[in-house]
Image 1 (cartoon, rainbow, N blue to C red):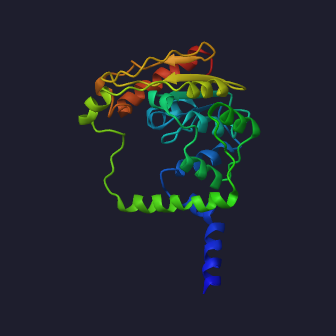
Image 2 (cartoon, rainbow, N blue to C red):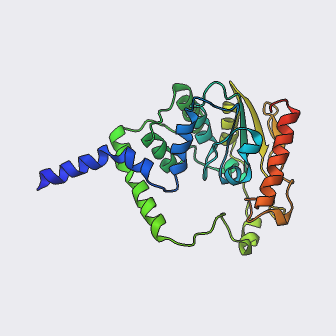
Length: 265
């Protein structure tokens, strides 16, 4: 009996990458991003960021790919960008106050999904993350497959948890976050600087709900920033950070105009 148990466990670990691809959990978008990055017919522009960029920018209008994903960090964007074909020459990196404050470089669940989908960090990407955050990206393949069980658990939880709302806070809790403080983490700024190489990067400072007052962020002179923090009115937000569909249309048009002014469209 123990032999059969061990054989079953070994088989499950062997099939784990396929299982992660087949499941639809909170990290499944990362596999799609990696697969599409290896497309033979790439556009010249790609968008990175968290869910604000994922729902707030229409890549079709910009003629590119939207490679934003839920809670994507700057380091994760840097790692994903290494997979882009050379024909992609422009990166639109959406920057939100919450990304700037994060204390971590890479979310373990996100990175595990990337590994299960065939991702391997290049030496320069690994070196940048380790230098700035002191975080290692080396994970033993067997340990990664064992960890990947969390994707099965997350997918099953998603089947049984109904009526989950989008966005990260309901409107009645604005007064709670309005009193919070979000100090900028210098390491995150260093990651932005590290990613600003090889390709043309345009950093979009995302709209912020007028009731929120995060700490000021001055874009380093080495970066090409477009400040849209005050672009949208209260009625164009569905929560503290995510625009409504009408707000997303307005934000997309503003980004399109900024790119056109730079000769990038």
